[in-house]
Amino acid sequence: MTVSPPHIETLKSFTDNKGWISTPEDMQVFVTEQRDKYRGTSPLILLPKTAKEVSNILKFCNENQIEIVPQGGNTGLVGGGIPTGDNSQIILNLKRMNKIVSHDRSNSTITVGAGMILANLQQIAEKNEQLFPVSLAAEGSCQIGGNIATNAGGVNVLRYGSMRDQVLGLQMVLANGDIIDDLGGLRKDNTGYNLKALFMGSEGTLGIITAATLKLYPAHRQKETAFVAVETPQKAVELFSLAQKMSGDTLIAFEIMPRIGLEFVIDHMGGRDPMGDKYDWYILIECASSLDETVLDLPRLMGLMVTEGFEKDLIIDGVLPKNQKETDEIWKLRENLSEAQKFEGGSIKHDISVPISKIPEFLEKATAATCAETSGLRPVPFGHIGDGNLHFNLSQPIGADKAEFLNQWERLNKITHDITAELGGSISAEHGIGRMKIEELERYKSPLQINLMRHIKKALDPNAIMNPNIIFRIK
Ligand SMILES: Cc1cc2nc3c(=O)[nH]c(=O)nc-3n(C[C@H](O)[C@H](O)[C@H](O)COP(=O)(O)OP(=O)(O)OC[C@H]3O[C@@H](n4cnc5c(N)ncnc54)[C@H](O)[C@@H]3O)c2cc1C
Image (cartoon, rainbow, N blue to C red; front, top):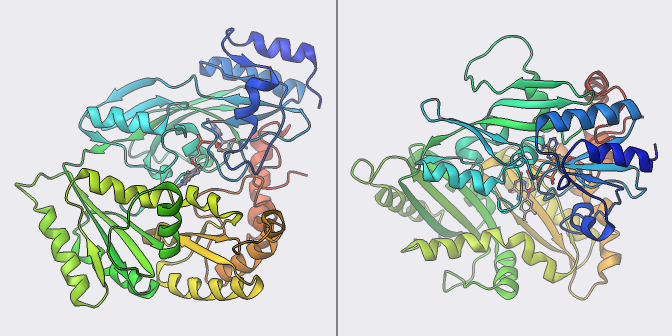
């Protein structure tokens, strides 16, 4: 359906004069994906301030069959927040709904607008000696609503779970404008289907999340980090088991990175190699506790764990940062890994998960198969090994033509995803499906499950105005 000038004028009238953008220049950051893999066009971007405004917009769009792309911080990596290129979809961005609604300290919950930036929520919690544990490299821009709609993961999933695990309540606006207010903050509620759970990971296809009630935890009073070298992914998995056994629940992050990734970061984004010698694989381990040092000696615990790792021949070298500056430097090496690959030309991405025990087999098979397909290929697998989640990214051969290399995206995806499926894994561990992996989902998910998702969408959004053709084809 074309969005006509009268439609646009009516849509603008549902919010104030700061609540819309309609000039192509000002729209650029909203219609372009971070990695520039997707670009769209839109006749109008709406920035509502209240759930009532969102409701009025959706009701009008539903009656006039105008398609809507919900958008948060636009840091998604699968094109789900970017409109198509035919100027037929409006964007509804939540950035102005960014306030605290309520903060219940005794219940350890906070209710915030969906447009609150993740890092801001972390800071609010910190100021109150509480913790909001979801943490990812895009936290300075991504929004709570986007985090919920993608069920974001990040570095602390192994201790606290993903975004889904933090949500106790949601306010949702359905396609017809109805508002479901379920912000109670209850930890127990068995009153039929958990409808809000449908919105977690829905990627904007069912309605708009306008507010959320989230769990808070006691703040960390101590944190210890180690950066160690291991010989093989198998040793990394064994070290993970050891760390889990010895950490007494304090283990919050266990991240793997290969030598080539470390070199990309140091060469292109700065930083220094924390160890004198070069090794094939590195692990970043972090433990944290809300207990203070008079009750729990966390440096000693980390020291014992690393010593045991050396003695069991799992760790071959390592450093324990002496202060926050050194800790931050080590985290920067991990956080800049994705960005650093840009400087090495084309990079074909995968975001897979397999059972942790299958990580070594996955790496061996996927590396051999993709390198056999493309000579000179440079795999840069890194990520949340403690969750069985790897970003199996493939950098182009040195000197190759970038566009020609990127033409192999689908072929290399298929090889990698076939191996993932054979090992009982998922083709999208944390980034979602968006418009990028629709065909892949059709290949690996059962038709029964995809059809059930279609039926759910039809029940909630019969005119298919909410982000149609994201996750699965609607027609
Ligand atoms: C450098 C970098 C590192 C990253 N690291 C991680 C990581 O470690 N773990 C991880 O999981 N992801 C990671 N991501 C991906 C991304 O940050 C997450 O998917 C994030 O949750 C997206 O939030 P957003 O606000 O930017 O959403 P957007 O990109 O704006 O939107 C994402 C999807 O959610 C929908 N949506 C957004 N807001 C709403 C709403 N209020 N209601 C309904 N639907 C909505 C959109 O339609 C779209 O389909 C990373 C991205 C970058 C750029």
